[in-house]
Image (cartoon, rainbow, N blue to C red; front, side, top):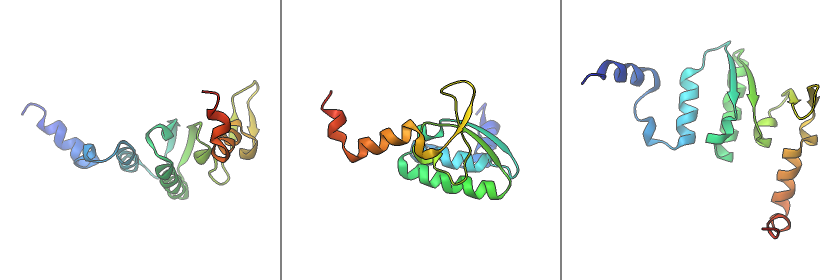
Length: 125
């Protein structure tokens, strides 16, 4: 098998059978495997792979990693991820960048309004 050593190295680093898990579970396992205490992580929309329940699990993972001196810069549209306690949320909507409060975010209010009354949005379809 020409790629046996590469496959073995991948399995040793990331474990076997990531393909037997859901996309979100595989993402979380891969993220945990790559974590280094004190690291800096730049993440672009990690919620794309995660259900709301898995996003909560991801927040728990972030908390553990921050306690081990990791830092994160995350581009996200997820109200769940943006709710991370003591997160600094920067708005790129208008120049210059500015700090914004979670409660004032359009993503938060729109999601809340939709969940409180989906028919008011869906009747326009």
